[in-house]
Amino acid sequence: DDDEIPVGLGSPARGITLVKDLGETFVQGQGLLTTPAWSWGTRR
Image (cartoon, rainbow, N blue to C red):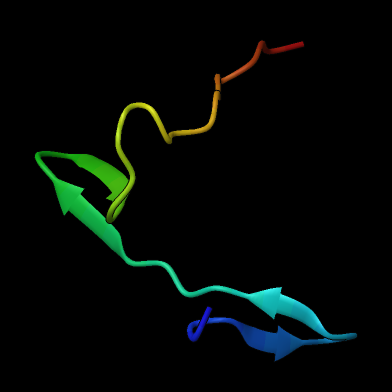
């Protein structure tokens, strides 16, 4: 991709755009099917 920038030992970095809508922050272009699984976890 054209948006990959070499960082460190040649590992690519990608820029992302964060969007805040109605109190929720999400990655622009990411939908329900492309969002990674995530949970708050538990307090211990």
